Image 1 (cartoon, one colour):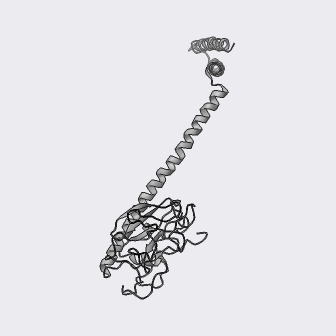
Image 2 (cartoon, rainbow, N blue to C red):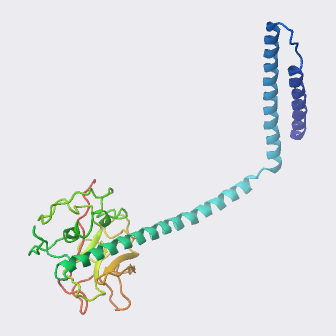
Image 3 (tube, one colour):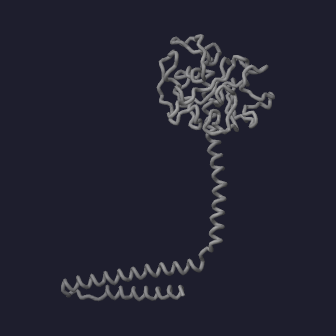
Length: 302
């Protein structure tokens, strides 16, 4: 029935086209202006009618084709299910790729901080940043209580600004916005502007020097406050990589993305047999003075 209607529409369309041609051909160049105006209006009406008929025929033809070759409800549901499966597989893959690229960039930044620490040590008797410096750049007896205080000594002489210390993936220690770039005059104690709260992600091991064991950890991803453990929960302290991995920079400047033990939530070292490489006071490893300092948490609501 629909195919017959479609053929009828095609015949009407052909007839309409012929009528449109007949409207365009008649006319006398000697006719009055009023006659030409009336003839033009009649031509426009017929062309408009032909356009409507053509459009209607096209719609009917489309409906006829769709009824003959369209998908059934079952086939449509199968197609939707297949697309849903592909989407389910694609999203985790994309998230893993994003996480891999983010951690690679973070590792590169941490290595630059480690290099800055070595440059600092070259100017301070081989010692990495520890006790705070006075206005003349000399060590004081004031010990840092957080990694912000220790690492701020690298700015601006060894690191140009604060941005490299900030990590957007860290939702606990870092603010949502980048550091403001404001720094204190050299030797300001206590520090107020340089590497302020919310501008640093990295934890730091104190009282190490270039003569310390090369494989000892110097810089690492921040952990749970007061511990060397990581968190499997995104948005919490130590949860930057969901407790699966941690970036660690060693005294010799080398760095890697280390494995976190899912049971203990600590960074393990299979080569040395250590179950927690960031823990102080271990024999033949970090001494009791080599404590891990975490950053200052980001202010609430910032």
